[in-house]
Structures are given as structure tokens and as C-alpha cells.
Amino acid sequence: MTLRAAEGRRAFLRFLAASPLFALAVRAGELPAVDELIASPEDALNVFDFEAVARQKIPPAHFGYLATGVDDDATLRANRAGFARLKIRPRRLVDVREVDASTELFGRRWPTPIVIGPVGSQRAFHPDGELATARAAKAGGHLQVLSTVSTTSVEDVGAARGEPVWYQLYPSSDWAITERLIARVEAAGCPVLVLTVDLFAGTNRETQARYKKRDARTCANCHGETQQSYVSRKPMFDGIEVSHLPDVVDAYGLTWDFVDRLRSRTRMKLVLKGIVAAEDARLCLQHGVDGIVVSNHGGRAEESGRATIESLPEVLEAVGGRIPVLVDGGIRRGTDVFKALALGARAIAIGRPYLWGLGAFGQPGVEKVLELLRAELTLAMRQAGVTSLAKLDRSYLV
Image 1 (cartoon, one colour):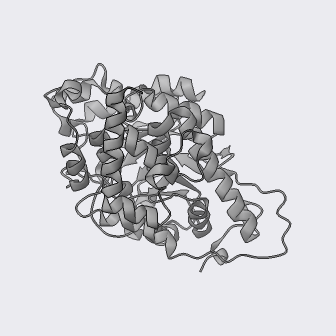
Image 2 (cartoon, helix red, strand yellow):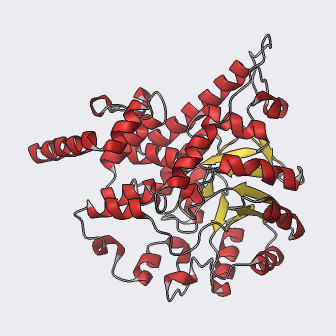
Image 3 (tube, one colour):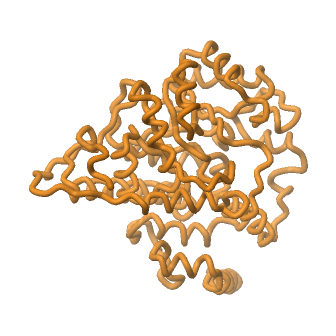
């Protein structure tokens, strides 16, 4: 390390140590002290160890994009806090030498219920971006969902994963863009289309704005000066004419008519991501939706202040087991996974934790994050006396 780099690192660590949010997290046991940053993935005890390293390695503006919620970040915090209000009710004298944590989705059995959720622009966190994530998913047998605004093409991600991934779709005000994207992911063999309905343009991401002020780089050097230059960095739009960004992400005019049109256009399974109310869950059934992800976009969409784990029960009750329900938001421990599955979720999806691993150490970091969560889930199942997810239900929670 050069003298200048070493001085920069020391200055950053002094800044980090002075941060009141960081200090609170250290006292809560969710982040290590500055002088305890891990040097390799194998040193990690939990996923929070990766967050501290990623915060150091990822440029401030990019880390702000990853860390932010909206307004006061109340919904972001609620997602995490919601799990603390659920308690596990263990059973005793159960032979737990063999534990089966596999789950089934649309006729496919996965060895783990931990899904790699869609997050865009992953090369902002590590040069290998979505390819590193896909290789880690392959190593652990995880289902992966690719973002519309991925910095790697669906074809290249599928090749790295070793099979087609699920594809997340943002609604567009230009149906021609939607059709081109659908045709491409169908040709790539993607079996499931995940339509995001929880992100409305114009969110007030104050934390991201504050981090951006700390970044001395000129954003336009990489991102360009126009919205078109931004879109040009997203390979899923290669060959598609996009005049302005709202053509790509436009939820202002989104209605169930768009869902119907999408349903009639593709043979892929259709999953809606962002459903949090029973009324909308019942409408999903009426409109031929095949699955639901209970999500508030990781607290990055509306400032409802309500955790997804609190929204999950009413959605599950509304669908009555007729379609699978997944959930994301605030999942950081195997016990969190256990609680979501005990309520009735078929699987869970994570975002920030695997990106902390990616930003900290690339593919090995993602692999270790997933390994830690799988190990913690298995341990939670054994401690509670549960030998398979099929036997896990609400009786294990209070």
C-alpha cells in the first residue's frame, strides 16, 4: 500500500469511527469495531462483517446508493426491526441430525430457500458485478433473479450461473421496450418474469444524497451527462431506442391492465414483486399472476414505516396457498429466514447482504455471505426441533 493510500485509509477510518450511526451499529453488535475489519471472507462471523469492509471499499456515492432508504429511512429500519418482534418457540427431544432446508418453486426444487434478489448496477460495487454473483449462486445452488438495469446481459449471467435465471422487469411507458425485453429473456430461456410494482419514480433518497456529497469524483465521467448515456451502460437495452429514462422505469401510470397485457404476452411464469396488502394479493389471483414477492423495495420506495415481515401474513391469508409467496426486506440472519418461512413464505430473497460480500471481496465474499445464512438457517432449524421446511409452520413463532 502506498503512503498516500495508507493516509487515505486512515482518514476514512477516522471518519467512520466518528459516525454516530456506525457507533450505534457497533454497540448493537451488528458491525465490528473499525480495528476489527475482516481481511478475508473466511474471517467473517456474520454478514455484518462484510458491510463494514464494503463501506470502506465501495466509493461513497455507490455505497450511498446501496445503503439508502427514503426520507428518514424509517421503512428501511422497520424491515429489520420487524423480525425482532417475532420470537421462536423451540420444540425439544427431536432427532435433528438430518435437516432438509430445500424448497419448491414452480415445479423446481432448490436446495435452499435463500434467493439472490434483483439489484441493478452491480459493477458499481465490484468490477465483476453480476457475473461474480452468478458464479456464487451456482456454487451454492441458489436461485438468482436478474435486474432490468443489470450491468451484465442476461445471456452472460445465465452462462455464468450455468442455467437461465429469473428476470425482473420494470414497467415501461413504452410497450415496445417491454416487448423487446420479454422477447430477449424468453430467448435466453428465463422461466419466470418478476414484475416490480413497488417502485414509483421520484423517491426522496436523502441518505444517498448525503453520501454523494462525500464523493470527490465527477459522476459524469462514468455515467455521462444525459439519461441516454445512463441507459447505454445497461446492456439489456442494447439495440432498443430509449429517448428518456421514464420510458424504462415508469410506475405512475401502472395499472392491472399492464399486468393483463403482460400475462397475455408471455408464457413465462409471472410474479409480482411489491405486493403488501391483502386486497392486491386477491387481485393477483384474479389477474392470473403465478406468484408474489412481498416487498417494499428494501425500504427504498414508499415511506410506509411498515416492515415486509408484518405485511406477509395478510398476503398469505389472501392467497390461501394457491400461489407461492416470497418475501424480502431486512433479512440478515438465519433466524430471520426461519421466521419468514414459519409464517408461510415459500422462500426469501436478499439484496444488501450479498452486495456487501460482493463489494468487500467479489465472488468469494458473496459465496461466504450465502454460506453463513445457510448455516445459520440450519442451526435455527435444529435448535427449534424442525427437520424440514415442510414441517415448519406458525406454531414455532410467538
